Length: 334
Image 1 (cartoon, rainbow, N blue to C red):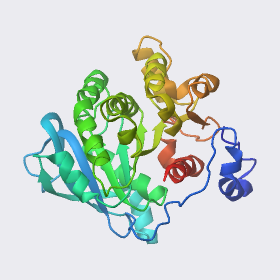
Image 2 (image 1 turned 120 degrees about the vertical axis):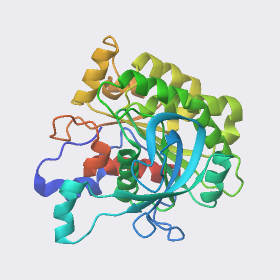
Image 3 (image 1 turned 90 degrees about the vertical axis):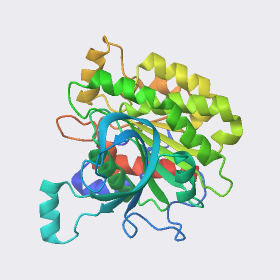
Image 4 (image 1 turned 180 degrees about the vertical axis):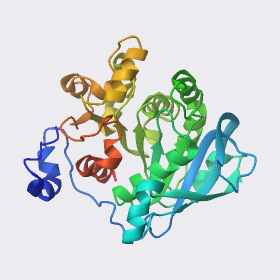
């Protein structure tokens, strides 16, 4: 599990030694990390590859770009992002604006979208972010950019975004829309797996996005077997809002591929407590007993000692130690 920082003065050494502090959960091994200079990072090429099952907005040149309604299938596009300013004034302004933002969306493709996505990512590893409940297209896209920047990813940053209602009382609609998107997600992952010159696909799924990710990986394993799954790199499930029994069933069906999965948990995640009440009291995987999760063959990073916020549901974006877990998970599977 994550080591508790002894003091603020020890933060840097904690981050530097994170591999050792996670020795019980991770075997990092060798191999190149995301420092491969052949590929650009999102900081010097701020473009996000977009795969979505949302319906495109009437005018893609203006926000909201994609809405909460379900589309007719998978669409591909590129989102041109604007990074936060690094000046003092820009950092102050980002407190209000939120930092990264979507500047425009272009190259919308609704025919053979999975293949179009694969061609756009050819020759590169992909960091594919799958968002959770109550997310608009824009909030999900900015989180994907923050994630890629936060772990220093070099390759193709991307997002799979499903039709969330982006509202507090849309939990049921969101869950069903996420599951409705499984087939489109499978098409995307299979297209990437079958592209000969493609790199590996690293998936970071947050909250409810973890459920559609697990269910889709089951479909990919059934359809493509070892060959398809070999193209899947790290699978990081951050605060997974998944029924623990359903989680256990899905991971068991993945067999040895469970070893690709890292679960970031926290007993202080208040959002998961609410989800548990909505789900009839069934425990969520993101707050489950660590030993039960480890017994399934997944890696577990317990982030309970980190985060002093009210919700503590997005530590993979906001906390340096937890971001380091994501980075090392990707490095391990490159």
